[in-house]
Picture 1: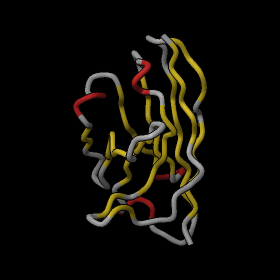
Picture 2: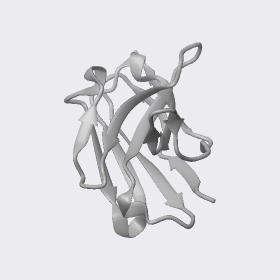
Picture 3: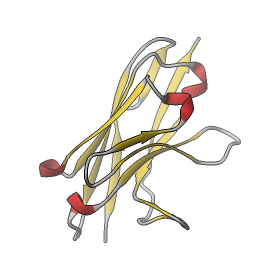
Picture 4: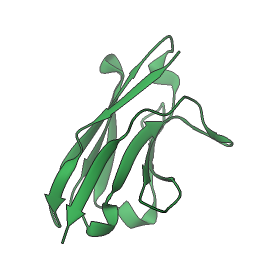
Length: 118
């Protein structure tokens, strides 16, 4: 069984920064998995905002390009999301998981709340 633990959220003013962490544990070979960061704002569907592949290629949704950076440390089985120039529209609960065509590979963690005030 795989466990995902997200941390690092908080409340910041617009223009501020946060660094999120996603710790992955369980009987998997972490390094072979693509890992994505998702977010879900109140009343909205969960959306995938950033992905880092097993080969450390990255991809971002347009709304966060140039502001968010995803990275991974395979030795620590951890993925990070550096978020700069935060906007109120970035307010959401942020989750990590491994993307699949039908959704995601693992059970969802508890997420970490990010609140950006104007």
